[in-house]
Length: 445
Image (tube, rainbow, N blue to C red; front, side, top):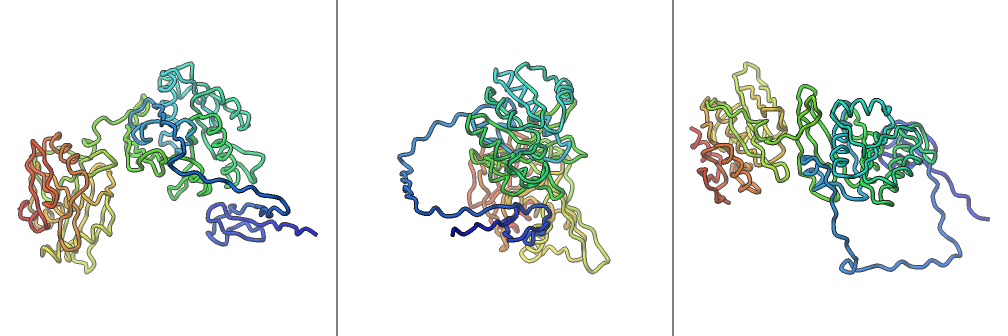
C-alpha cells in the first residue's frame, strides 16, 4: 500500500517547517506566514533520463538589449534601461512618488513609440487619468487597466512593450491561499507576473508596499523572484527623493538616482553635489568638506561637528548622517594618536542636507571637522578631504580618487588632502598627501 504523503506548513518569511497548522510562526514570530505545502513523492518504477550539462563556453549568449526609460536618473540606477523580460520590484513609502515616477516613465516610453500598459489594483482609471493630466501626460500609447482579475489582464498585456503592476499586494490569485496581500497571495501574484513577463519578453515593473521597518512587505522570497529591487525614499520635509538598487542582476547596486518633487512631477537633479554643500566663502570651526562616491557619481558632503563642555560624567555622542559607532571610533583615534581629548565634551556631528554617508573615504573629513571643533580652529573653506582613517591613525587611500578630484576641481576647490599612498594626477587643484591624521592636523592649524 502506497504511503500517504503528509502535509506540512512552511513559513513564507523564514522557511520554518511545522507539521501542524499554527497562526504564528514559531521561528520568526510573524503572523499569517504559515502556508500549507505537500512534499513531492519520489518517482517509483519510472526511468528517469539524466540531464546533460553544457560547458559555459558553449552556451550562446544574446547581446544585451536595453530599453531606455526616458529618465536619465532611472536609467543610471537600472544600469542603462529596462531589460526585455526583466522583472523589477519598486518599493517605497506611501506618497513618496512611486506611481508618479512610473507614470512619467510610461509617458517617456510612449513618446518613443512604445505601447505601454498600466495595471492598477488600488486606483481607478479616472484617478490615474487625473494624475496623468496633472503631470501633463496625454500620450495615446499609455493604456490603463483597472480590474481585479489579474490573469486576464496579463493576457491582455501580450500586445504591449512595457507593463506596470500597481501594486503586487492588491491582487489575488485563485491558486494562492489567504487574502490579498497575504504572503501566499503575494508570492502567487509575483510568480504569475514574472512568468508572463519572461514568456513574452515584456519589461515589467511591480510596485510593492513598505513595512514600518522600511522593508518591502510580503515574504522575503518575493525579492528573490524578481531581477531588480529598487527602493524609492525621501524625507517628508524634503522635496528630494533618492532611488537606489538593493538588487540588480543586470547592473551595479551602488548607483544612486536623485529626483526633486515639483508641481510638474519628479525632475532629475542635474548637479546633486550642490544639494549637500552650502558653498560658503567664510571658514567656520567644525566644518569640513569630503568627497564621497555613490556608484560612479562623486558627491560633496559637508560634515559639521560641534563640541561643548558638559558637567555630566557621561558626555553625549550624537550623529546624523553617519553611524554613532563610527563617530566614537574616530574620536578614540583622535585621542589616542593625536592627543585631542573629548572626554569632557558633548560631541554632535551632522552631514548637511540630510545626506547619509557610508563611504569610508569620508573618515578624513569627519576627523578634520571633529579636530577643528575641539580645537576651535577653522579649516580653509577651499580645502576638501579624501581618505579612510585606520585605528593606527594612518590615512588609507580611497577608490577612484581621480573622479573625486575632478568633481572638487569643477566646484572650485583649491586644495585637496588625500592619502600619500596613491597621489593622483590632477590639474587645477593643489594635492597635499598625508600618511597619518597627525599630518592632516598640521595642515588645518
